[in-house]
Image 1: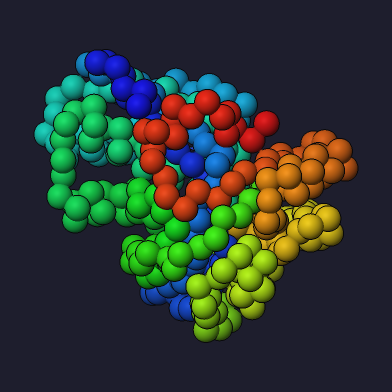
Image 2 (image 1 turned 30 degrees about the vertical axis):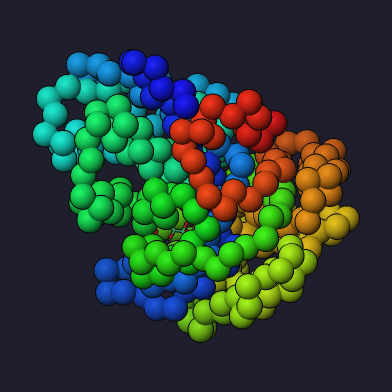
Length: 309
Ligand SMILES: C[C@](O)(CO)[C@H](O)COP(=O)(O)OP(=O)(O)OC[C@H]1O[C@@H](n2ccc(N)nc2=O)[C@H](O)[C@@H]1O
Ligand SMILES: Nc1ncnc2c1ncn2[C@@H]1O[C@H](COP(=O)(O)OP(=O)(O)OP(=O)(O)O)[C@@H](O)[C@H]1O
């Protein structure tokens, strides 16, 4: 655990939607969805230090993509302020964010950061809100924050607020590829044609990565066509991932543009990632294991870099 007397270090792993079925649109514009979510060993890292005021420092390979954002609008800082309000605290916290996850990429980087801040402040402040209060705070920050807070393979329903434990899943590896375009989640939802089909769930507990891929193949990401209509390069990304040797299945995550390819082994995933990096040197490409249960403090301490490089 990277917790000294004065600082807490927390991991914020990327979220990956293995399926994303939209089943309805609410009057307020939000969509009812059903999604099988896992986490991948690609992380932002957050360090929290006690301070009189709230401040944020962003570093790491993806930091420049947040340069234009006013720090007070950063979801990590918003999460900290709301937690302080819930705790009735008058002091602040200094947040250091190591940004490794691409921004506006469909793999929940901001949501993961927010969830990590909440975990970290619970520890730093020894403040234990009720489960209901914490869930409400998380959902108020964004639809993906509750699942990130949960930090384990989950079937997500409602607008992202209803969470069920996923069936036991096998170990597997992912290659994540982002073709270098930021995609706005609201714009992708808006571009969705509005046809709703029933969700396709895993029928049996998958015995292997291959078995899981066979079952997932019947499932969908219902935002794919909308995202491709906004950024056609996502179609190319999916085609290249699908064609990688040993790839069992490729799909888009969330509202894109990041797509994933599923592999049985680390060796296959790393070999495929290397080939894709050679073909597309300007893209962000990472090989990562699926993490079925996230220990946000233990993972932050991991000697493995988990930064996607
Ligand atoms: C698409 C997913 O990434 C799947 O995991 C999430 O549902 C999106 O989660 P998120 O980025 O945390 O979403 P929010 O920040 O709450 O919402 C951004 C925008 O996405 C759209 N949105 C989001 C979630 C949802 N269930 N229905 C929606 O229509 C809304 O237009 C909303 O204004
Ligand atoms: N800490 C943060 N990390 C990333 N984006 C942030 C952060 N704070 C605020 N944002 C803003 O949030 C928006 C969405 O960013 P994020 O990287 O979370 O998108 P995403 O991966 O598509 O999320 P999701 O998959 O949950 O829809 C961007 O406009 C970005 O400027």
